[in-house]
Length: 74
Image 1 (cartoon, rainbow, N blue to C red):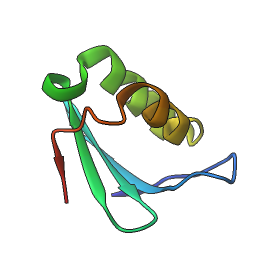
Image 2: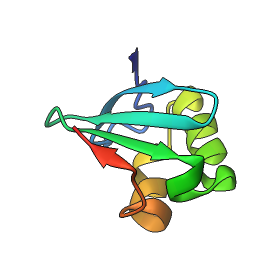
Image 3: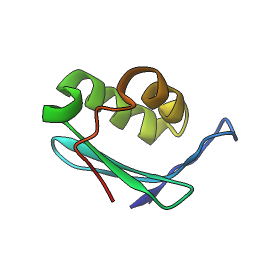
Image 4: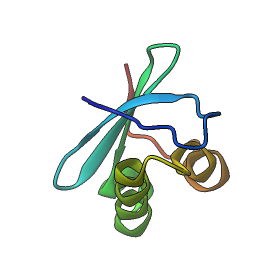
């Protein structure tokens, strides 16, 4: 997992992992959510990857667009 930069300073996200067709997002409580092209759509997953790399806006995007569209939760 890569550390999420949290440039805005108010994110609940601590880390992420990028794959060819997925992103895993780890929240501050330790839970890990898997978002895939199949579960959330290619466009939204690619946007999440972009925001993760930028270190800002990922938590807001998840809450607004893909909150329940995860493939699995650890």
